[in-house]
Image: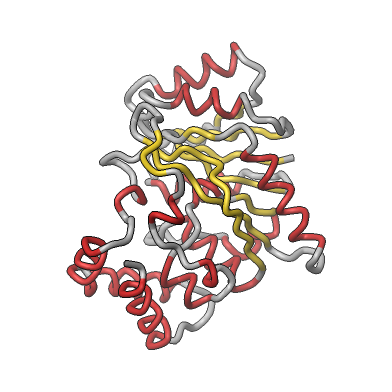
Length: 271
């Protein structure tokens, strides 16, 4: 069984398309656990209508905690996950039909090669699309000049932030290391760093999701190039402060000089 963890906030524009893509998955043994983070539009109404009309197994959390923000909302979802595996889900994405199936197959291969109770994660490439799901770029990895040797190297993985959270599949043992999540960090980055540190991560060089690029999301504007380098250097002090806060929250010590070396290295090599 897999729990798909969906945090929503004013997502009425795309939420039905997302649910449709989940309903169309070739692998069917999953639940969708929804936590709404204080929407003021029709997001919950649409989800409830879809739940009553289609065969999708949807559970809506009612925790009365209001607007927590993305990180703490996903943390609440993780705490309510009881399945063997879980996946993060963003309200404006569209999942390719075999997303779960091929990710789970790779997960089983990974787990079979490791010891029992090893935290594992699998992530994939993605299509970058416009608001109407027209493909802008058929490989985020290629467009971002993603270096795949970083996947299980802790400092390189922290420097590059290689894994899109919306593509990730994790086993339940990850929860033992990832929870609690500090409110000042980004949930998927926190999870993947802890998994690299204490377990194993695998990457599939296959797009499994259509990721909408628009002003309200994150990775669509991080493709590499001269503009990428300029923006990174322009904000170098601010993001080192962000990383300082992130490192301070980690349950292990970080070599700041080693991290800084790899961060600057990848800024100048991903052109």
